[in-house]
Amino acid sequence: MEKMLADKIHWLGHDAFRIDAESIIYFDPFKIQGGPEADIILISHDHHDHCSPEDIAKIQGKETVIIAGASSLKKLSGRVSAMAPGDSLTVKGITIQAVPAYNINKKFHPRENGGLGFVVEIDGVRIYHAGDTDLIPEMKEIRADIVLLPVSGTYVMTAAEAAEAALTLNPALAIPMHYGTLVGEAADAERFSRLLEGKIRVRIPVKE
Image (cartoon, rainbow, N blue to C red; front, side, top):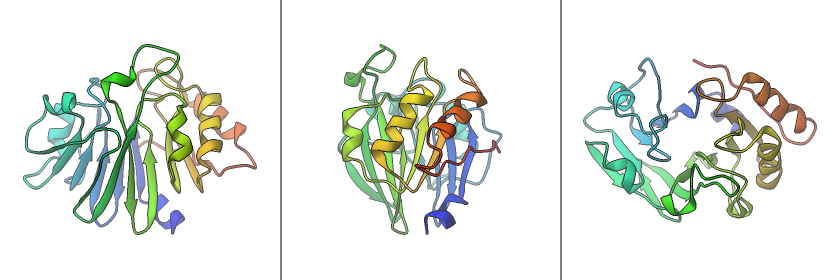
């Protein structure tokens, strides 16, 4: 089941993904060309490269539900719903859990800002989008079959730290993100993959 769902996960660059399940789910759309109308849009935090009203508008319909932290929602309109770390809700049949996302050795994403990662459950498969985060203790408590992890360093985990996070999470599949747009390069994703070779299956995504 993980493999079937993995084929429906499309990387749109940076931290942006689209999942083509029974509901169309987007994470952090940024610099996208457009796409199928969203059922659900999940926004990890209020930085411009994650909470982009102009990109959200390209995929937002009258029935689209946008889920984000309170600071992000100040920039957005439509059917919006606030979440904080620890919250859970079900939208259009999709169970969504908000988990913490923050820095522990840098100042860009302090914990008190309430940044979010998301665990969404689709047909029994749990997908974790980590948001902009370091390797944090809360990852020990997250259960996920597929994980989307930042690897670029600077604002988030390095490739080595992300590999350690993947080993902590122990998913069936890990997909690197947060590179190739503002910071980080394909080499970061390749290093992440090499570090996990023989331990956890990694798919380096191709931008769509």
